[in-house]
Amino acid sequence: MEYRTLGNTGLSVSVIGMGCEGMNEDNYGMTGRLFDAAEGLGINYFDLYASDPELRAAVGRALSGRREKFVIQSHLCSVWKNGQYLRTRDLDETKRGFEEMLQLLGTDYIDVGMIHYCDAMSDWEAIVNNGILDYARKLKQQGFIRHIGLSSHNPLVAERAVLEGGIEVLMFSVNPCYDLQPASEDVDDLWADEAYAGVLTNMDPDRQRLYETCQRLGVGITVMKAFAGGDLLNAELSPAGVALTAHQCISYALSRPAVSVVLAGAHSVEQLEQSAAYCEASEAERDYAAALASFPRIHWEGHCMYCSHCAPCPKGISVADVTKFLHLAEAQGEVPETVREHYKALLHHAGECVRCGACEARCPFGVSIRENMKKAAQVFGY
Image (cartoon, rainbow, N blue to C red; front, side, top):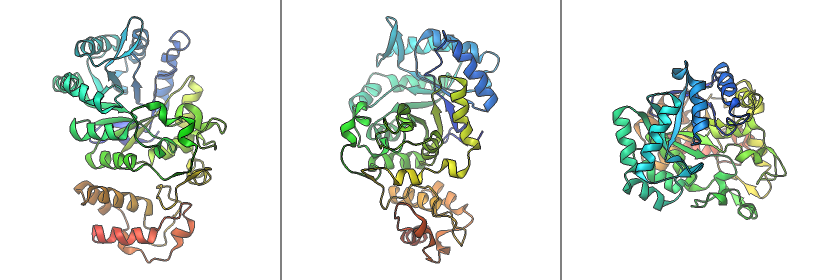
């Protein structure tokens, strides 16, 4: 298993995390089997958005005796009412739901308290005005949650929350089809057939800016819908018209700025093992560039996808890393200290570029790499 630090939280987390979609199967018996498998595979992060009390109790039983081996991302404002799941912005309901969650999970703290499912600006305002955000801050102050998170599908709402709300972890939908789509307050727009009917070009700038903002501020991103609910793995269902492999989807998500964990839903131990196998996959198996370049009606021309197809550089420059740091600096309008230090730590820098053009000949997306290296040398000074 590979591990990354989750933003500025200091938490060391497995790059493959576990979703909770299949845990209620086999009369909740799947829960224990998945946690046993996760421990054996080195998976230490999981998301629990579901509010079903029976599922939460099953997770509690699965955690018994090994709580400290797992990092829990569980959701505030996801409650159980009248026998069904409900997203609430009522403060009293949120409080009761959180207290019940702790009891059922058999723990006295949650690592990441995730404010649940905020896709509209008005909804973010309700979270602030109804006392939900203040309640999350109070829980953190009291030690009941260690870090405050937010889940969203809307890059504009997510960015506002990150900038205004002290959000430390963002749960966001990341895959190469959703990344093409503009911000919307209706999550269904992400997979609507008409959204992919025309010719789409490059990543939506609001999404790109969100990832770069999170990287700059140290907000860790945990990824949901990396496979678009499985659609990306099936050519007939995929919005792109081309099937990707699970390894390619995971690799794409993990190459975005600020991303630490891909939450993989599993309906069996075998499915969880297949996702975890990413860590043993070859570079060729992880490579998503050729597949993305073949998408019909979708063009990534001139946009660096950080795929490293440009390598090897005769001067040893990590072109993908240099370009990523350049984009982060350009998005900020200055060079943040963290970006400067990460750039400094590279073994070779943009100023060493001899403009041979070998990288551009290999780039599937026609990126002006030599020009980017020139810009980076100017921005960073070497």
